[in-house]
Image (cartoon, rainbow, N blue to C red; front, side, top):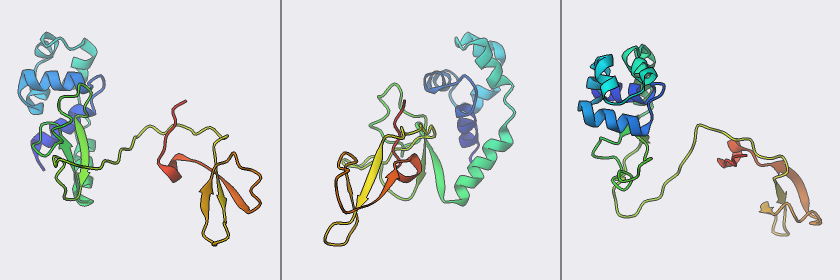
Length: 172
């Protein structure tokens, strides 16, 4: 297990440390291990708020971070940090580009044309008024029709749209 990956992942799991602070700290200290080895005074001198400096200096959740890396390895995935050469270079200029992507498979993420699938850990409830109506046309194959067409005589069922079925999220 790479020691730098352990420290980079830990940095993303540290309370009060987001994308901007992580990038600033990595520029200032050189690498993630050095960030965690820095004294509280050095962290404060970087401009980091006292609470965040304390969170880094007192970070103890190493076992959880190590377990996450082992799990990723077990399923054939790996973390892809913005410092890795395989990280999508098109994202680097963005101020809010993610520090970390989880990657599985073998694809060149820096190829000229690419398709992305984006997910989120935050699941928003979908309003119960949104529905998918499944109908069976004359050909026999089910298809989706708008919920605003309740007069369709071939309607079989009404199924609520949920995040676990569609992957969509609709923030309130």
